[in-house]
Image 1 (spheres, helix red, strand yellow):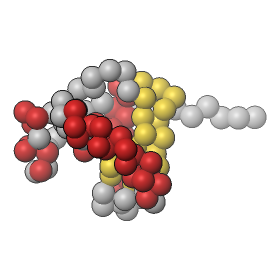
Image 2 (cartoon, one colour):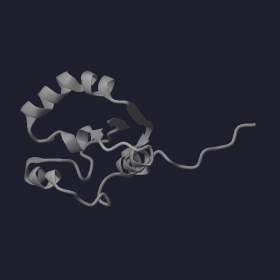
Image 3 (cartoon, one colour):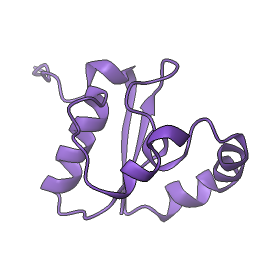
Image 4 (cartoon, helix red, strand yellow):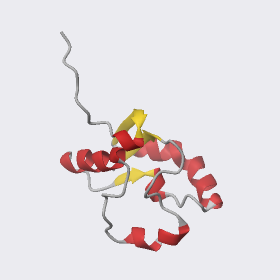
Length: 104
């Protein structure tokens, strides 16, 4: 599996909460998710990954017990990933696949 590490600027749109938790067990549209998540999905698919771990989708944000439990296992999740996509330099809403300046 691949995992995404990205800059969070508070309560991101499209996060998993108790009210939409059951909907996350079925395919759902990615259009409402932050651009960094959408781009990570594209990258993971392009590289042939079937699974992508994204904490704001995999962890129920308003379930404090689950958040505490998952934080304890975060290092294992990251270390266990075959690929870590790091999008830490820009806000989640901006994405990370922007233009790449050429170097001389």
